Length: 330
Image (cartoon, rainbow, N blue to C red; front, side):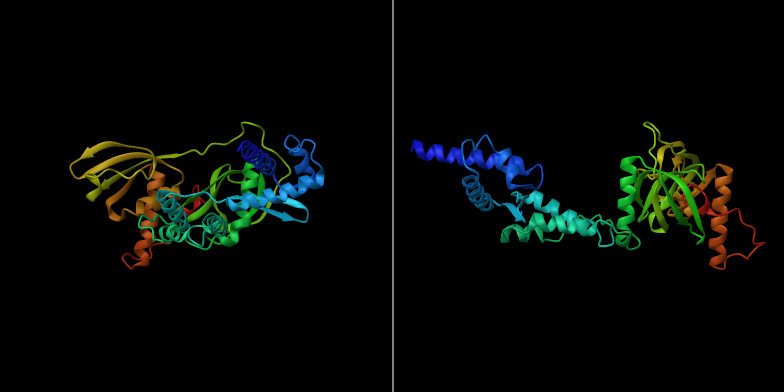
């Protein structure tokens, strides 16, 4: 029995050493042999090669796959055992990302790898429709823009300024020759680059599907360099059913400064004029933008255009204050 025990212990030590080396990435047999010198002490190379090939078979029986490609050994990982809650979580991930999400293909491939060896019982749980859905469904197909997002992510990680051409909401294309990228955010069903634009002299939100001719500049931002967005402080009156309910946290630093039986006056901060106006319009006639005056004028201009569209008022004199598309989001 002692001999059997010693043999099993030797195999376990060898498997552990093999996995430890392979976790560092693909490697040749020579590198494996050197990395496992403690367990191969005194063992000839060809004998070690045969042992490794047998050990790969042992790992495969445990669900851990090692590929051999042109003399290179590659660890593909093992299949973990999922409990029911974890299978539900995987299904939630599967049903959260719409095919128009730029990373949908990568997520699908990852889930396929994680679930390809599930048992029939586990597959039944995993394939069950998720009732608690919160679909990340972009307004347009962002899959073609995955390369641009990947480039921007590299620039953000490397603290590298970029340049690009941007087409605004009025279809006007303008070059931005120096932009400091900070984040990529998803809201209002679109992906936005949050960045400081030398052209605009402030932090703006650029819709990624409107970016073209992207180029990473041969520069690096000094440590600690990050321009802050200047949030806009504003006030609005809220009426209707929301007065008695908890107020949705749609804005930053939101607080009630006046409370009446049928209305509330709320002070908050927003990322841009466009974002504030578009968000308040969702409340329809139950939200009135009160302050600051210039932002209220932009809201009035937007409401006037809506009224003209539906034939409620005449065309007026055609004057315009610039519209909501000119502030903070481009």
